[in-house]
Image (cartoon, protein in one colour):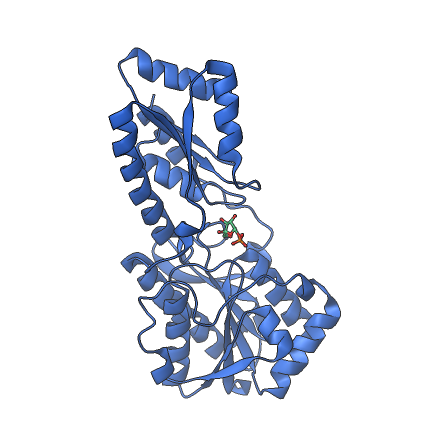
Length: 330
Ligand code: F6P
């Protein structure tokens, strides 16, 4: 966490970065309205880091934040920017911000976006506070990220539907959910949807174990099963799992990949409230002269956590939930 003279801030820039997440608009709205409430000017940076590099800044007013709370996606657009890994790109972004009179930033995104923000702060002294927004819930330092609850509920609704057709046909299904490096979505959906097995990056379940599990269920009269697989680094891996299961056991599994459908749609109440709290907390931190940190939630309380303590650390799915999922489907 760094300190800076808070009275030097007149204008705050807000941007969304990385994969979009339902609730990002609620976070933009909250950060903007709290800043405006305190007499600050607000600019939106269009498209995340690429917009910072091209100088695409738009004024934000109370009115322009109307009717966005309930909308999925991000009205400011988002993107991933390999270019921002270069120091000269960050120097250009800092010069653009200075020229536009933007004194401080609120970055809504995941830890990749925060890593870029941290470098911009370290190299060019731009005060920045992060707001964790990603469906993956994999940001260390906060119990929940914006978008996670909505993604889990969307996936769960799909799994309940699949359960109906699986039961009607006595079928085995593998449902693939998002989650690049972590299994938060897979585990929550697995527990809430009563999955028979959950494959995710932190869990070393083998295909043989999954087959044993399915057989055990069949022996006690179970005729249909649903396995959940986090996509990990290889979207579409559910097909590989289905093939491996077929080769080893002869069981034919239907595959359903939920993909980006989990990232769209109206945010849940929980995500709107989290986004409203964290967007406001980020602006409050800047107004106290705190930066180089993220605004998160721990045990229900809003906290600020220095980037230094949060970035590069792996947030892991709780063993208790994993064990519970295993026992419930035994
Ligand atoms: O980080 C969020 C996420 O949705 C991951 O779960 C997923 O692996 C990745 O983004 C997909 O990214 P993209 O939309 O750029 O393909």
